Length: 146
Image 1 (cartoon, helix red, strand yellow):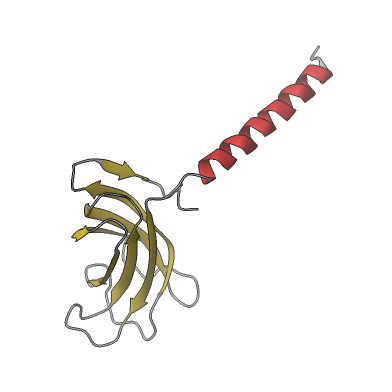
Image 2: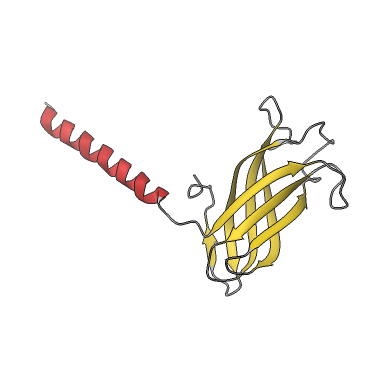
């Protein structure tokens, strides 16, 4: 027969462990800050649409490239993308320590038509940062971002 007191203590300890693990995980300092907004205004960078990205390098070393991941949704909450529901962009650009990167990136390879209104950008995060010294920071699933 199962000892109810032992089972109850085990459950409490397990919940405490999960709570503390999540708490410690969420306190991890991100080496960046990022925002993004889709645009469909006339541009020489794209034909169908683009995303205007702002990324701040919080690290004390220079970024040489990074990978951005995000989801796009139409006004009804549906994915407008063909065959996928997320966008992955590999961006090569030097970003000095404690400096801002601001750039519009084409989304033409992911879109099939010009939308009437810009799509909503959600769950935007950086999955990898490669620094000038060759070191790398990774968050493959966006767990640190949220």
